[in-house]
Length: 237
Ligand SMILES: [Zn+2]
Image (cartoon, rainbow, N blue to C red; front, side, top):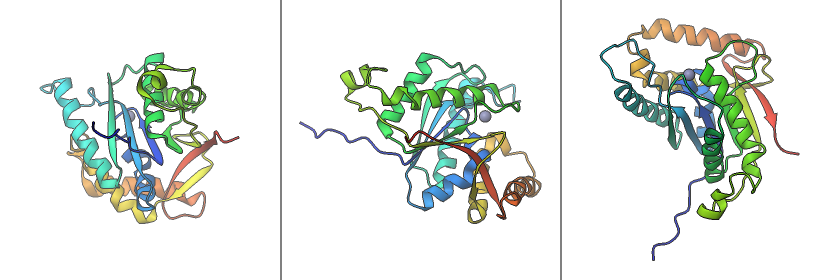
């Protein structure tokens, strides 16, 4: 009899809608967490199968390409791995099915920190970003915590319930948590460059300068050279 397989654990779980969301929005933060020895995993609701202007490319070809790009980008930041849920790009819905899949990942990887989109921000954001942001908070609290929610996870798969500690929400109207990414700026740029299907035709120097400016603006609010910002909420009580 083979020994029972012990599932991996995550310190931080990045939950996003599309390949490249995380690198653009908070790639420096992921690099920093990984450098500090934290195990970071990604969950991607979609594989970004609509993200092209190339009319010769089929959605499944694009999805396959973007999954490879995303794995490369995550590895460039020091993350442990990516889980793709395979929902269609642009059509993500806040359903019990999506929440159940997110609950299963949370119970499997048992993260302390969730990093995701702020689904409650007033400013406009991509529909899939809004949806994943709302769904994963509901999955974390209270669903993943309560054994009577999705009871088949415990009964059929032996997955224990889990309490997530906190969530960092990106794209917030009023960020209250800033991460200094000065030492990780270059690593973030390298990770973004892995998304060849999305950034392959951009002028790298001009693009880097735009990214630098954005991080400078965020950092200036709190006396950092370069920063990424979040709204931080705690589930600890
Ligand atoms: Zn996106």
